[in-house]
Structures are given as structure tokens and as C-alpha cells.
Amino acid sequence: MHTCLNGISKMIYTQFLLAATAGLLLLLLFKKWAQYRGIPPGPWGLPIVGYMPFLLKGDPIQMFQEFKKKYGKVFSISIGNFNCVVINDYKLIIEAYKEDVFLGRPAFEIQITRSHGQKRGILFAEGNVWAEQRRFAARTLRNFGIGNKNSMETLLQNEAQELGNFLAANVDKPMSLKSRFNASVLNSLWYICTGSRFDVEDPDFLFLITNIIDNFQKAESTGVVFFFPWVLKKDFLIKGFWKKYLETRDKTQGLIKASIAEHEKTYSPTENRDLIDALIEHRKKSNNPDSSFYGSEGEMNQLIVLLDLFVAGAETSSSILQWAMLYMIIWPEVQAKVQEEIDSVIGSSRIPSLEDKPNMIYTEAVLCEIHRFCTLVPFSVYHSTLADTKFAGYKIPKDTCIFANMRDAHHDKEFQKVPGATLSIQPNAKTFIVAPKPYEIIIQTRA
View 1 (cartoon, rainbow, N blue to C red):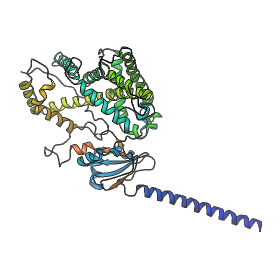
View 2: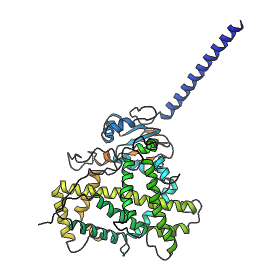
View 3: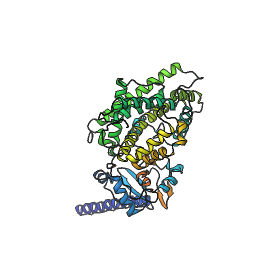
């Protein structure tokens, strides 16, 4: 009798446990259903990793084109623990990014690590920090553009002259301009930020050229680093990447810190020599504890803002120069028209200046078309939603990662000016920054 009762009790307990487990699972499924009800449609991914394995196998740009046809201009896709929404329309991208709710940044570990535990600076910051730092940097850099011996224009003219001298000295010699463009751009950015230039043989300069851009390209090589940092931290994908990434971060920030310390010693409130001086002045005047310029947080933001301008600007600028050179070779008739306008407006006895811009309509149009055609950053800087919102008829939950498909926007047939234009010379866009494949050129003197 006692044994029988024990058996019944165990059976009831087991049934109760199974019922409770089933109920809990149903509750979790209902919560998930309620959470995702009304979000944009999209492809199903795998547990834990989402759709990332399929993106790694193919070309995301081509996949997104197919998804756009199947699911519409706005669709969802999961990548790891991140729920993402891809916007594939020029007008919708503009509409979304006019709303403050879309101006967040995803909490990617590599970016949080880069800025020491918080979203600081400009590039990967959000909210008041982003607004304050971006507004100040834009205003200050615009002021530096006004003509004087230390202006950005004068600096760029000097760098262009130096690059021209290099090309003239290497006529009829096959060369790759990638490293030369990197050197010119890095030195320009360093001067704007710190007021000094590197010697091309300086070990620190060579370190920056080699390691910053190399790390940047590896970090962006698949997108894995954003969504699955543990893959790189555990050396599963690129051996030694995370260690080298931290070493490069610390050394680069160390160089910036050393320049800030030197500026602190020689700082004068009557003269802003460069961006560091301007940041120091603004930080010293800040008396609002809630400001991103105040106290120790202001010092940290100062460091990360300089890093943002220096590192992000270096790779994008040098890559666009490589694309420009390549396109001029592929379309010599366009090159000839640009040269004709340069000869007509500027001539050969002086270097270009900003005052020439209104008279160089064709050249400016070509530069804009180069940016559009190569779409250097196919998915722009990733954004995230700061709160639950409604967009294009769909529900977009808080902390959703937003992809603005700039490649689609730049090549939308609705806006396309050249019927049938293709991107046959562009490699598969599996990278965040699309650089051309390595190539060499031969400079020749004109007849």
C-alpha cells in the first residue's frame, strides 16, 4: 500500500513537473511572439548565431537585394543576439535618420572596449554625448578651414604638393599608391588634431600606417567582430587578433595622450593652434557635471573624439582616393574632361584652392559620382533604436540594430542616372569598408 502511494505520488509529481515545464515554455513562446509581433518580416536564422553563417558564405549585398524583393524595403534579420532591421530605400533611410529614436548605437563589445567601457566620442556614441561632441567638432573644424597658415586648406595643399612631387619623381615606374595615400591622409589628420606632422620614416608613423589600418580592415573583414567578439577573443577566426587589437588601441591612444599632455603644458587661452587646443579650452570652461566635456569624463571623451577623427577618417579617405584613381584609369574620357577643367580653371602654375570650387562643376560632379558608385561604406555606421517605435507600418523594438543599406540607395534604379550601369569592377562587399583590390599604376607625362 505504502509502495503504491509512493508510486502514485511520483507519477503526480512527474506530471506536474512536465505540465509546469510545458506551461513555462508556452509562456516564453507567447512572450517572444508578442515581442516580435508586428516587426518587419525576414529570413529565419539558426539558434544562437542567427543568419550570420549564411551571410559569411555569400555576398550580403546580393542577399539583401533578394530579401528586398521577397520581404519589402524594410525587413528583419537576426545576427547572434542582435535583432536587426535593414532599410533598403533612399527616402526611408532619410526619414528614419531624421528621428532621434534611430540615433542610438549598438552595444558592440569591440566598440565599448575601444572607448573603455562606455559609448564615448562621436562615431560610436549616442544621446547627449554624441550631440555635444559632434556639434563641437563640426564647428571647430569648420573654423579651422578659414584661410590662414595653419588652416586645413593650407595643410591639404602642402600634402597634395608633396604627393605630386612623389608622383613626378616616379614617372614610368609601376607603383601601388595605397601606402602613399595612407601616409598623406594620416599625416593630414594628425596635423589637424595635434598641430604636428610625422616624418615618413618615424617608427610611430609606420606603426600607425601598418597596424591601425590593418586592424581596422581585419575587424571589418566579416562583421563577425561586431556580433561575435568571442570568436576573435578566443582566436577562432584570426589568430592573435584581439591581443593585437588591444595593443594597437593602447599604443595609438598613448600617442594621442602624449600629444594632449604636451598641449596642456603649452596651452594658451589666447590661441587655438589645433583641435586639441580647442578641446582643452572647451573642457576647461565646462562647469556642468552633466556635460560630456566635464571633468574626467571630458578628458576621456577628448581622447576618443581624437581617435574617432584620426582612425575612421584615415581608412575611408585613403580608400576613396584609391577608387578615384582606379575609375579615372577605367574611364579615360572622364579623366580627360576633368583634366580639361583643371587646366582651364587652375592651370599648371599654382595649386588648387577652395576658391576654385564654384568654377569646377564637372570635377565636383565626378567626385560625388565616385562616392556614390563605389559606396565605400555599404551599410553605413550601424545605428540602434533608443526606444520602441513605429516605422514604415512596422513595430521596431528598443535596441534593434539598424542597417541603412547605402549600396541599395546609391544604385536604386529610381534615381539611377546612367541606365545599365553596373559594379563589375567592385569586389564582393563582405567588408564594412570596401577598398579596391590591390593594383599598380604607371604615371606618364602628358604629351
